[in-house]
Length: 162
Image (cartoon, rainbow, N blue to C red; front, side, top):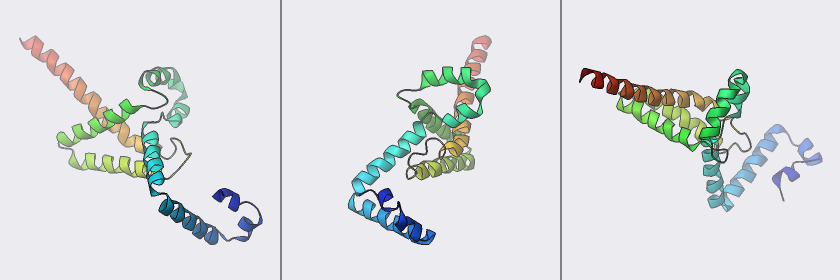
């Protein structure tokens, strides 16, 4: 029987918030204990989907950039996921680390992982839970763009000096 079915009606109304919380913990422990493999599979799938999912909050908040945003997302999205953005984010963290920004890189990675781990147990939330991690995402992607720009301009200066 579905847990939500158990909580509908008079029984749920008669329970205090503390009792409902304890009951929910008991059911969670039971499900994880009886089906750990299924739980881990769903947990990591949820993390992956939240990390690579197109952010609907960005689209809503930046309506004036919808045309540009739609162009970029249509080129970077496969089946509703943006794995390239995730890969570039990891590359950005590595660039920051290699460039000597140890504290900054560590902070951004921890921030990113915190929301990734949290998003694994928050089902049906979409990008709302992972949205704060986009701060580290944008900084890491900025590091990638800056490195690419540096390589392009360095190559141009080398060609001019020859």
